[in-house]
Length: 82
Image (cartoon, rainbow, N blue to C red):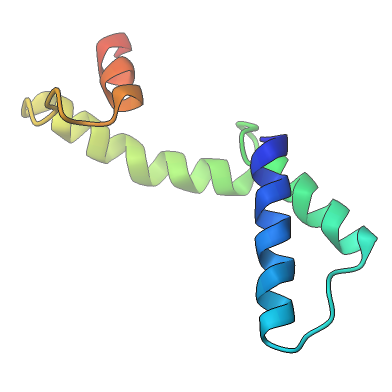
């Protein structure tokens, strides 16, 4: 997640510059990166929300055999594990 957070931080700074805003301060960059890295923690609010939204869909797709070989490989692995 560190690489993802770095990329998001760079993209946010780029977007801010394109719109004439100042770049994020180092403290803001650190906070943003920390929040992004924390998303993978099970007690994180965003993690919980994404789990609530994606698990019913995944379970439905599993129950109705709607997972195909053309789907995302990580989805296929998750389906196999479930």
